[in-house]
Every structure is written in structure tokens, then in C-alpha cells.
Image (cartoon, rainbow, N blue to C red; front, side, top):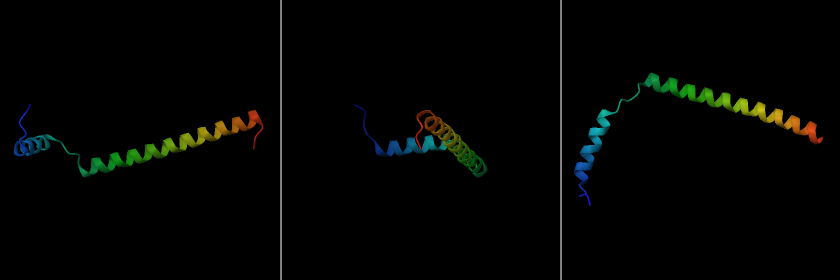
Length: 64
């Protein structure tokens, strides 16, 4: 079983965090904007698909 050394763990974590390439503020804002835009686009797409399916079901079964 491996020996647990909290100090070594913290040193290892700091070493790994130093290797991370963090995105710039501009990259983060652009990516966030794209995610929000794609989410809105998907929501509109599924709204339209849902309405078309509902219209077809009403026409098929004569409900509503």
C-alpha cells in the first residue's frame, strides 16, 4: 500500500496545475457565447419539431 504524504500530494498538484494552459478571457467569452447560441438554436429546433409532431397527432387522431 502506498504511503500517504499530504505535502507530496500538494507539491504534485501544484506541479500539474502549472502545466495547464488556461484560456484567455477572450477565448472564454467566445466559447461561452457559442455555447449559449447553440443551446438557443437547439431549443428552437426542438420547439419546432415538437409543434410539428403535435400538429400531426392532432390531425391523425382528431384531438384538440
